[in-house]
Length: 321
Ligand code: NAD
Image 1 (cartoon, protein in one colour):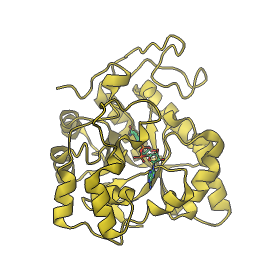
Image 2: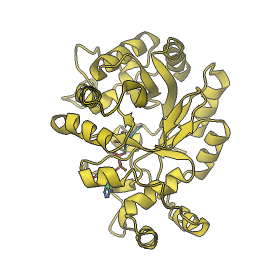
Image 3: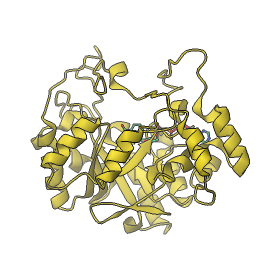
Image 4: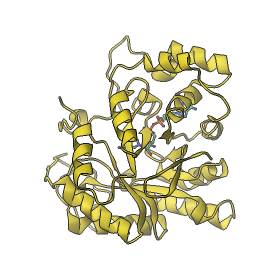
């Protein structure tokens, strides 16, 4: 699998497998299937509620001799209840124990949002809600610097070989760069042709930080959870004529075109699928090249549509301007 060099000195595969919303009862087999299909990067998170099953899949793949631990690149993410310096390690230890590994390849701060601490023994994963019945969210601000310094400590001990950020705006990234002793190796962000973020991509890459795009298929991941409210004229990204025509030209699927558009910008992708055929197809993005004019046509689809926006589901507008 082609990879991207990280500032930490490690390499991250350009295509990985996303684990959000992979149901627990199918997760172990899905992970084995993904590894058999050639994925080496697994994009996990405490919040996805399936890290025990992800760990079972990893163990199974290693026991079957399909892969070794050192060939895998395992990412996980620090959840918003654990941003205080004394809680970061507790969160990491729980993730390591659930995944059954003794180090992560990459640990990301999931969101720049800090909510009131919920002990792991009380509720795990805790989601955003302090009281899940009342669906009450209690924001408990922690300076990002405090959390980042705790991440640096974990990196210096080797428990996470690389550390990074997710869901930031450029200004907060600039702030991190002003104090980071270990700068973020990776910035994971929502990125697809309806939200192409050219300036942020340029700034991030210029600073030697690798980008991972999530939700490469735009709305596809958000339809089933009622988070696509764009009105009647909205065209699902996978069905957009520009994408379909380019796919036809290269004799590939529209999903492959969307993934290729990102990797051709040296941006890693982490598509999620539970369909064995698509799991394989989503890795096949290295044997065709989009022309400059095809890249430009896809760039032209940008509408700054953000599907994963805490302003909508938390009333906490981190991207407001
Ligand atoms: P995605 O863009 O990978 O889309 C998944 C959807 O596309 C699913 O409904 C799937 O059935 C469909 N799909 C997959 N392959 C297809 C194909 N070949 N043809 C047609 N449809 C196909 O969406 P995602 O899961 O939101 O994002 C990928 C991963 O990114 C997640 O699983 C997770 O690991 C990560 N992520 C991170 C954050 C974050 O805050 N850092 C947020 C969202 C997602």
